[in-house]
Structures are given as C-alpha cells and as structure tokens.
Length: 191
Image (cartoon, rainbow, N blue to C red; front, side, top):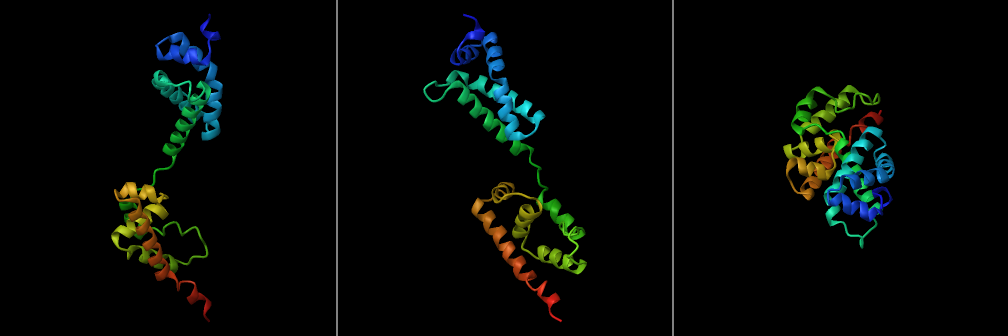
C-alpha cells in the first residue's frame, strides 16, 4: 500500500518511526487545515506560515506518544496548531517599556494626555505630579499597567511579586490618584 493512501494513524506512526515519506505525506495531507486554523487565529499569513511549521514540528516530536483512544490525529494536530497560534499571538504583542524607563520619561511627558484637547497643561502637570508622588512600588505598578499596557499578571511577573500584590499596588495607586485628582474638574465648574 502506498504511503499516500495510508490512514492518518499510520502516517503519524510512520513519522514517529522516522519514515521520511510518511512525514511528507502527513504534512501534505494536513497542511491546508493547519494553515487555515493558524491564519484564523493569527490573522497574518506570514505568522500563520510560521505557526504551521511549528505545529508540524511539535507533532513530529510528540508523534511517538500519540494515543488514538484520546482523539483523532486530525483533532490532535489541530489542537497543537491552535495552541501554537495562541502562543505566537501572545509573543507578538507589543512588549511594554520597563517601568524605570517610563518613570524617567514621565516628567518630560504627559502620559499620553497631550492628544486629549480637553485637558489643559495645568491639569497635565497635576496628573504628572500625582503619579510622581505615589510610593515607588505603586508608581511602578501603575505605570506598567496603565502606560505600559500590561495586565496585573504581567506586572507581577515583571516585578517578581505575587499576583495579589501586583493587583493591590495597582488598586492602591488608582485610589490615591483618584483621591488626589478628584477636585480637578469640580474646580472648573464653580463660578
């Protein structure tokens, strides 16, 4: 029987055993589905190509431990592809700046508030001063979260602290900033 007519299980077993023809037939059989799923997750053809290659490499490495009782070869391979695509999308996210860099930029910037015409220069200065007055751990956490775009989990990892501590620092910083800046717009409304 030709390797091209073999079942999915047989191709995977052949690939696990080092059969080059089985590996080629396996890739050709699944390449469109793998690429299609990778593209659906990444929405980027170049990245989907990379993900497809990574999925086939992962499948090749794990072929020897594949268990037909748990899933079909197709389901197993597409699960590998989905996971590889999600990993690729996460890795592609913009890496936020280091909090020390953000802190150094802070006095010279307006934390992205320049583009909002309703905010006056004096208000921008008040915001800068309020952020600068935060305790160092809270300032670093809020800069990473708000300006750096990191999640609380990413802040925890970047700062090498527990997730709960990162959440507490962010929350406390937000409360302090809210309290310090609560009168900002009230003062404008009084005649």
